[in-house]
Image 1: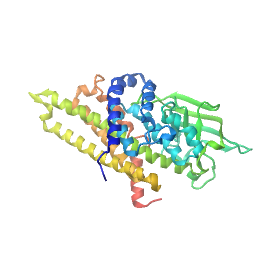
Image 2: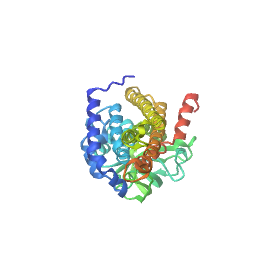
Image 3: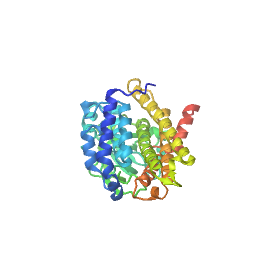
Image 4: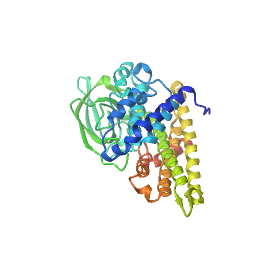
Length: 389
């Protein structure tokens, strides 16, 4: 595995770092406190190519590779996880699926507005009673009598960017009698301005508060047949393939917040004096710093490995499920570990809103939950290794 970054990678990393620290970091606490969606930042990120990093230039993106994506994601998340979540959904969950499974017409129509940051994309898989067990979803898409469109009814929950999304990728049941059930799932491209699309209340969340989340309901929503993504019954395959890509982005996000917590802790350990010397001189603090650093670097290797596998898959079509799950599992648990240790190292100041440490702690937790909990990642890894289908 070649870990040497080329000139293009260095440029995108440095551009993301400069933007994150100069534009995002100074206002991150404001957006966290108010829960306001950071649209001005997203517009600027779109102009810089961050909202469609791997999207070919022909469709409005930056035309870069998977390594460039994780490098940029890491830097944006280091400044603010909520902003990086919006970036992640646009890149991984929305654009990636359409580029992989969409027709040329769908790519031209549905990708550019999202890749440029002009509009916001979303991904609607989860339902109130259907989370990790996606095969039990209840949202139905029934083909009209004349075969021109699908009539969609149902409810989706915990939709990231749902309150502001202009377009989304939706998964619904087209064949309720299919066995196994997931073979009856199909994917659709949804224009949220059309009748029958209803947004619910914005969810009050522990962390990533500037990343708006809500429930959405479909009431006799009419989706043209040409807006179906892939063939009927391919929805579950599309959903899982997209999540493989998404989990790499979340892993990079987790790495970013872990690094932010770590760097703040190192600085504090050097400056905070107790019992006549900096607390970094005490072995218990040193142990925490050593463990944080080691887990961060191990996470980085897993993320790069997964990103390289994703890049190779663009030509081979191979799945990289295990690599993505391992990266997401280890990096997300590292983020939570580092955020926890940062609070401990900072003591009372770590618990205060005067510093961003408590925000890192709240934001890190979601990386262990969305796009597959840590428990689900372990199940995915084990089943793949044991060849259980």
